[in-house]
Image (cartoon, rainbow, N blue to C red; front, side):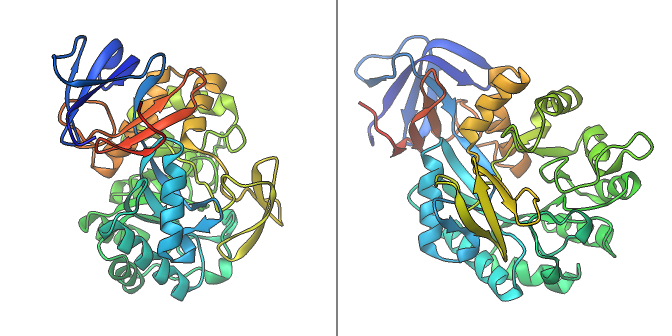
Length: 386
């Protein structure tokens, strides 16, 4: 696929709308044109009734197919990368979970290696710290005995271990000195997300004012909305600039809550995540998430205490769920898995949508919204082009 070629699809999900029967010219790994008719003497790849979507970005993913970011190995990075590519994902943040300090630093180093030496499938866009700096009240699948003090020394050690790849730091804003740490991280260009927290509405607002960017898997792992205390969830939903991670698996959030989030937030401030764990793509059974045992039954992962423990979700399924469960327009749902996360991460100049000048990264799906082919920089990383 080194030479220029057109992708001709029944529907092309561009940044400006869905274009029927259009051609997308790929040249040098970049989108060179989007047009109703091709130029002569350039190869045309006919996609028939398939739809051409922007490649998805999963910014909160722990593992898949028996591999976990906490394995801290190149093999696991490769497995996760290849598995994500099967589901239209072209880039991801390797996400940690609370574990020992030594294992955590090793995991960040592994993601850093993947960031600088990319795997064969979905791109490693950086590291996401979900762990260590939380509180017990909404700990979820995090072992509180490994929680650490929120200090600059601990933060600096993570940044160093990640080899410049740390993009997101999740923390509980009620921890001592959290606002100072939020400002410290923001000054270094690292996004701060609020989660696994019992923070009040005011504490959350203070953190957002200090530079925090939004809520980790909103409603899950945080103080919810009460009519006399809007809580952390209420604060991030009402803040116009706050970004909300959403797990649209039909389990973490009721369809009516998905619709509520959609009505309250600018769609560009809603980012679909999988929060997938090691069990993704495998059968029900017993697994580990960080330091805890989890059981997967009917595709739903829980700790022994009954707490939800990530998911086995994929982003293609999450987009489909948004449309079918919450009646969200399909283009907006697609962009919640592509353009919104790209904007959040600050890579929307090159990724996140089908637009001239951006990298040629696509998910090609059939009418059942099943991914048939995934393309990164014009090259097929999953499936094939006839």
